[in-house]
Length: 221
Image (cartoon, rainbow, N blue to C red):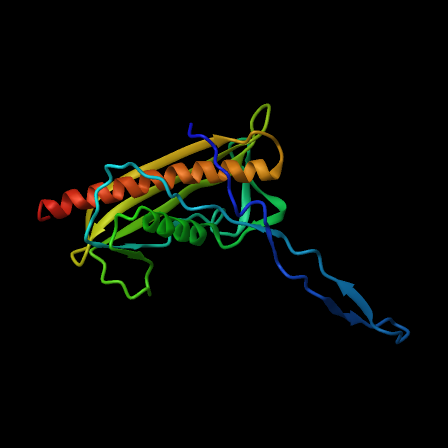
């Protein structure tokens, strides 16, 4: 288990601007319109990219395209998932991610690659990148999980395939999985645990991708 770090974005939650009042229903008698207020918008949360990596990570001269992860319908949403038991997937009320979970993970992973300072260029489709490799991803787990006792734990799991371009040959594939217990039932502590679990997975993906791609490039594959 890695030591928890401070997350600067947590302390300043981004709240969607309030939505005003909605137009009205006339009474049977023809009275004045009744104003109907909408529910409060959810508080929005994001996580942090990784910025620490092994000193012996190779510096590469090829470019990488990171695709948006595929995900099941239950995870392909901006709602923050919580698993009760083994089969019941629900969502925390009144809160959401800043983007759909797969898009948020893609953005954080691209930032993590950039933070490594070991890669010439990394980005997503439409970025104008002449990529040598593409990283295909599947988001398999990304939820809090209720425990028999005590606070929930968070679970993040991604499957990655490194594909060589333009041949589109799969060089290697690997699964990455991490869990992290929340220190309390406080939602801020649950978000911190999400950050730790996803951070462990992203760090491992960056290291694996750079080492695997560099070994392939060096072999002339």
